[in-house]
Image (cartoon, rainbow, N blue to C red; front, side, top):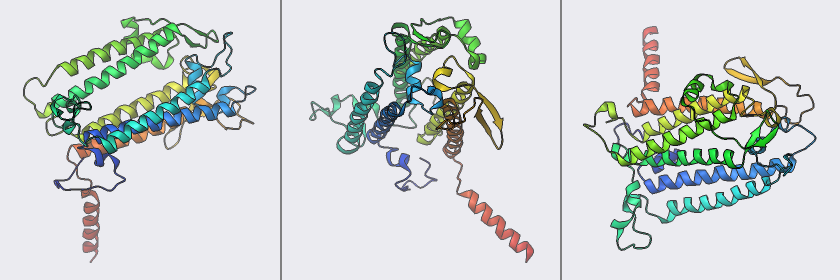
Length: 361
């Protein structure tokens, strides 16, 4: 984190990232624990929505978010293809169990394991620490070889997740709003079509193309992951390649930029696309309005609807504003990574006020 030239700078407990910046095992522990919180929230919310679900009211008009996502990927249907909520309770409980496992792993990294993985000893041979694989995942923020190695593993995990989704659609099937039924979807790996959908993906209406895009991403991410794991810095480590810029602050800023941009894209996509976000589960498409900033409103009559808004309205607006603030966080941390001292701002304002007073005198 930015230290403003003070190597002994300390932060308050509420500045969570600063506590784990140079402690790779604690850094992993915080990520795993965060995953546990996400799992717990997903599982608990799924069970809560299932408990209050009213079959006589359209699902999209009940303000739900977890159950509609499950219905979209073909979970909750009986053998006749009718949505009954079958297996939804299992999904919720499974997430709760996973959250406990993640919590345990987070505690291990936070309490028992060494603070830094490069000081770890072998789990089964503590007297031979040089044999542990954990050392390879140490954090050296200004070491491109170390960062590219870790990035490679992240990309492979993303690629495997894409493969899982593509295979789920091909073998199990997902919900097709055009047929109003769950069907098996084979991916359309047409590179020309995938390229064209860069510019019109908001209006995509083919599940085969959606799966083709995910299959392409899987190949691209796994290939990129293998490349980053196998290669090292080529040539001189210059500022163009990140020297004196590559840091915990910079990587945090890039992460915030990525998640912020994805959230904003998801908001626009969710607002209008009825292939990936079927009306049956999310409600009718939205209309965009402009005030101080963009926002979306329901086009359907919501009189008498308890939640007040469709699931689509909740998802769209929440994603957009979270994405907006993530982007602001990106700018904040990116400027700090480049050395900008925000403490100069109040000092400059104070000096300006003093100058104004002097002029009046």
